[in-house]
Image (cartoon, rainbow, N blue to C red; front, side):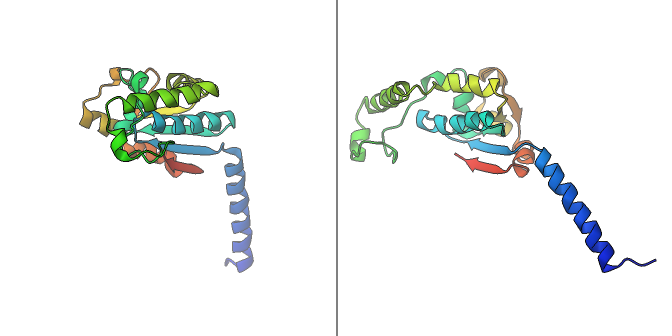
Length: 179
């Protein structure tokens, strides 16, 4: 008995249908990497993640390097907006102005005020919403080791894994963003 071209086409059609069915049954996935721990860089991954969760998209955020400050219970309530050499500063000021004492505090207060005026939740509130809506918050084990951060330093509900563990999820994600 030999296999014909028609047999191969039939098998390919069945395999394609099965793959399509499996993919349509699986939730969409989004993988985010947060590597910066400033107030202005804490909002994007958390807003994207909570929005994804509201849209029934499975989401994980991998916090690495200074992004760990966002989930560090000793640091996340005091995140700042750097005023020196920050290209995102809304007021076009010479860089030297950002070096003046008090400018970082002023930029931080401005951002908090803007967010509050339009009812954007705080970082701690967004973290709570993330956990409540099923967003996986993952701390990078290697970065924790390098920076001497212990699991007890992190807020509750954080998973810890290495890059390979996160990449298993990211490899299957429909959306992957480094923010």
